[in-house]
Amino acid sequence: MSPAAWWSNAVFYQVYPRSFADSNGDGVGDIDGIVAHLDHLVRLGIDAIWLSPVTVSPMADHGYDVADPRDIDPLFGGMPAIERLIAAAHERNIRITMDVVPNHTSSQHPWFQAALAAGPGTEARERYWFRDGKGAGGELPPNNWTSVFGGSAWERVVEPDGNPGQYYLHLFDTHQPDLNWDNPEVFEDFATSLRFWLDRGVDGFRIDVAHGMAKPADLPDAKEGVKVLSHSDDDPRFNNPAVHDIHRGIRKVVDEYPDAVTIGEVWVLDNLLWAEYLRPDELHLGFNFRLTKVGFDAVELHDAIENSLAATAIYDAVPTWTLSNHDIDREVTRFGGGEIGLRRAKAMVMAMLALPGTVFIYNGEELGLPDVLDLPDEVLQDPTWERSGHTERGRDKVRVPLPWSGEEPPFGFSSSPDTWLPMPADWAALTVEKQEADPHSTLPFFREALQLRRERDEFDGTGLEWLTASPDVVVLRARGGLLCVLNAGTEAIALPAGELMLASAPLVNGELPPDSAAWLA
Ligand code: GLC
Image (cartoon, rainbow, N blue to C red; front, side, top):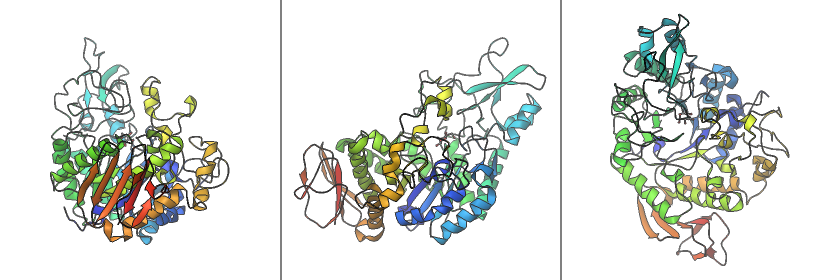
């Protein structure tokens, strides 16, 4: 690890492009929408954008189904738009990291279309996982693997002769066939894409399903009862040891560009196994999702932080912290919703920002947005909804467009009232415009917290020490002497001596009330 690397203490902001801002009035966010609102991100005080996929895609999984990894989808503005974004962001000292999706392509990718047309036993099929079915007529899938979005992970194709034939593997939607990374062409093409974007000024990549890609050669059955949108460490679909060679190959390419960073989405729970992805010749950073799993509970918070630090310490990597993203329920909702949920979310954010390492904020978090739980069935778009047989509503509730201004939907997000997901009328109170005018709202709080994190010496350094870890209260001393107190109990508590820098809620008689946090120097 290089302690001086720009990303080792950075604040990343995830833009989910469909939902951030729409510049052309089609109801879907786009890249020029981001350009138009870059100053919001400057004022927020972030260092880098993680841009969820904007490459060419039929949008079966909103861009995580890539049909051309080296071009920008017209829906998002095409190549000229990303060139504008990279230039405008760099002018403002904001780095751009792009999402790349190595585990699978879109079913519309020319490779997959060629594989379908070429038929069984051809080289074209060797780029994916085509297998004959089981049973006399091949009417059963090759194994029992399920798709993360529900249903079987195998889809049977109609062969060029018009008859039902082989199956292909898709760990996600049917429109996302898994690539066969045993085929060297797959790596070569991915390396070409990485260089393509790095040459255009991109500062790094978030690697989707970084614990996927490699599969066990014999594709053994998984144990039964795997849940939709989750898996365990002994699941043969993920975390195959051969994935580490792939990461070493990726790292070699990225190292041709000295400042570039890779951040892997690594859903692996065991610390030793997780840490392997952060060996010095693999990923620079790995998402650690433990903070997304804790309740508003001092013991759970303490344990999640300790656990994450222990995991990153194994190979001396930089810790990363995140409370939510486009796949995970927003923390305001997780912590109880409404006023209490927001109070707790703000307290948790302060705990997160106190920690040494790199932080990821999900767009809308700075506004205290909750999940939208009452989206009507007919607007749901996450493939999980269909594939789970309408038992899982999926992730649309965390992807509703951001409210910018005005009194009614679409709140300045778009010039069209017909936004890709409807926006709740009561978000009138949560617009950027409203919050900018209200010093006690969530947005100014975020700005101040990030400014302190950036400017005060107390945030320098990488240490962390627990002063109190009781069932109700966490007091930690981190970095250059920062004290962070979080009150998860039911009584107000006295604060330790020191200069109060920020509190997530007003003190009551000089004490820190429940469901809040404070920073002291
Ligand atoms: C990752 C993404 C998720 C996507 C999936 C398939 O988990 O974060 O949004 O659906 O990969 O690409």
